[in-house]
Length: 304
Ligand SMILES: [Zn+2]
Image 1 (spheres, rainbow, N blue to C red):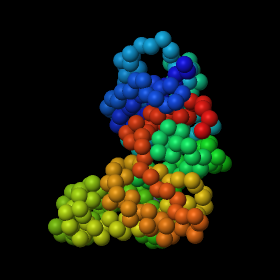
Image 2: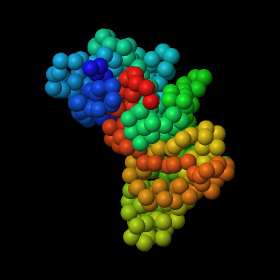
Image 3: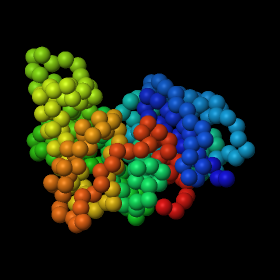
């Protein structure tokens, strides 16, 4: 049976898994990494993690890599990491290929997770999939006709940096009013703190959802506003792509129905009329293994 190795370089942690072509994980592990040690440190952690896997008769035939930052797909290099130095123009795919001597495919984490959810997760069986991760930032991956759509320069899926409120709050990308500036985890937390005013204290988006569940109207208003903008962003993408299904992962998606219930209504309200009904919006199924399973999906060839 063909085996595939999936690697997930997350910035502050690294995960690896070995799976068969159906995406079933036969081994999985995760280790923290020190961002200050750069690629050399991460690769050293990776080697020891793989060595800890139980040995089986079948070694991997290919390696997929999910990287938590922008990559140059043509040159198979990472462009930078937001977590630490050393990843600028780094030949990660070639470096891993030198170690394991198997074909390596590299992509960014949103693309890998999109393909993973399409082949092995919540969107299994669908050919046209829009995947969003709503977390520290907002990233997206697009699967069209069963294959990742990467665009002319590998820059597709920047849904997080589409403008949903001109002149809105500043975004880490330097623009204002991006979807990410309105609905990412830190954006939700910041908007809630602004509503609290002088009484503001440190909160996470998870805290805001929790406060809303206990009747805090300022938390509820904050969440409603974030979901409204998220819904606008998703509806706009749905109108362009006409996907079979939208899958949403990332930390904010763990809020469950408190997010998905109102989001479905908003997306339906802002989408073009589309008989016979709304596009399903589903929670991601792969959760914290999305990077590894997505990396495996990059290299595991199987019909959808
Ligand atoms: Zn932006």
